[in-house]
Structure formats: structure tokens, C-alpha cells
Image 1: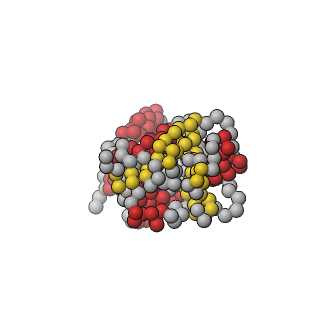
Image 2: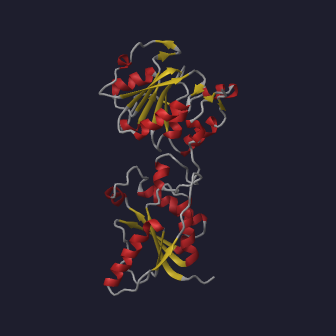
Image 3: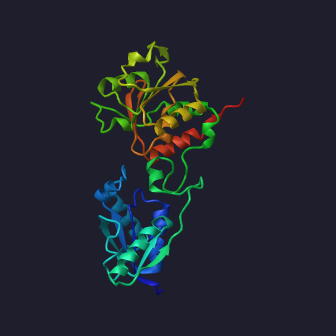
Length: 329
């Protein structure tokens, strides 16, 4: 089948390659014989204050895997972008560019620069946006923030912010198993601001070692017995904002979801003091945390468990929470 264009350009970070990226690339190959794909370098991404993205190598591999899967590889060329233009303002071979409405401004600027060089303008092809199931855009930023997955599924059920969840009996044995990996040896961390601790003993240990975790969830109990009489005994450093939440045993209160959500949005380190039990707090933390966030909690008879939040962890937490019962009043 004869294509409309000879060589079309497309560019982006392609971070957490998602449904929108795949659609954009597929449309590019449907319009053109060959496609030149510019992927933002790590240096350029950092310069544009795009933080917490996957490294260039990983993003490139994700694009390459997609190209091979769709049998597009032999019609493509990948280049590293150290600026917003790449080869588009100098190449005479490129005859078109595909963008979204968000990047249309850049395409017009490219054509302006080509015009100043007496070069033919690129035909601009506009690709549609893809929306997540909440009606908002699917974007790498939302994926990094842990709001949605790469297909646009939303992790947070809004009912969890309004209704208390009751743990069903059949899930109790499953939740006694570690939700992450058992920590062996010394705990090494890169950033204390990307950490939450759950449980008084775990929190106290982190406070002695580091002391600046983003969120600490405590109940002043150990093994369901009153051990601490005051949060000062847990050795917190600096001034931290305190949120008090009632969360009875065997339950995840909707106010706990709200408290955790507010804590992630805040610039301050937060202590969430539970009246009741914090045993199940790991699940709402996993749902609301950004990708690569770390959760540490104590598992009776096991030790400290480390959970690194990724799509798999979020899907597991979502699956478990979806099996809870809503409290009826």
C-alpha cells in the first residue's frame, strides 16, 4: 500500500510507554513509508525539569520492543533528542511530522525555522489524545504519579474516599503473607522523601537511622498491645505535621485514604496517628503512592518488609481492596 509521506518525524520522552504513545507511533507508520523517532535524552529531560522518568536506555528499549512486535522496526530510525528540534529543521528528507495538540506549537515553530532557511515546510499530522477511564488524559506524568496504568485504568476507586472498607474473613490468611520482600541486612535508601513507614517499631528504627520519611503511620501499639504513650518515644526528628485518624481493627476507614492522599500532596513530612490499628495501611499507601516509592512495614515473625511501588504492586493492592466489603450503616 502506497503511503502518503516518505519520512515522518515523531518525538517525545516515551516514558512509561503507554496507550497514547503506541497509538501515536502506529498512526505515524500508517501515514509514512519510514518514521524517524526522536526520544528525549536524560540530560534534556532533566533540563526541562522532567524528573523521575525512566532512563533513556529503558525508554528506547520499550519503543524498540513495540516496533519489533508491530513489525515496524525495519521502517524506523531512533535518534536521541538533546533539544526540541532534532533533525527536523535541517533535514530535506523529512517531509512530515506527527504531533498531538499539546505539541502542535513545536511543529509550527519547526516550520517557521525551516521557512527562514528557505526549506519546504513539513506537513503536520495531528494525532488524537487518549483518555483514561476517568475522562482525563493518559500521560506519562499521571503514570509516574501512580494515578493510572499504561492503559488508562485508574487505581483509586472514588468510593474508597467516601465509604469504610471491611476486611472479609477469606482475605485474612492472604494478608498475613508479606506484600513485598523481607529486608535482610542494613537498610539502604536513596531518598528519605520517597519513603513511608507503617508500624511503630519500623518507624522508630527509621527515625533512629534517618528520620525524614515522607509519611509515618503509627498507632502506639506493638502486637496490638499499648507500648508507647507518646509519639515522642518514637524519636521523630524535625517538625512534622500530625494527622489523627480513627481506623478500627479489620477495617480501612475512608478517612485513612483521605489522610494518605493529603500527605502525598503536601510538601511537609506527615505523621498519621491511628486510633485503632494501622495493620492494613500498606494497601491504601500502595494505591496512592507514585511509582518507585518505597513502603516499609513490620510483619510479625518475619521482620521488616520492603515494598517498591510499581504497576504490579498497585494492581495487587487494587485487586485486594476490591474484595473488601463496604461498611453498611
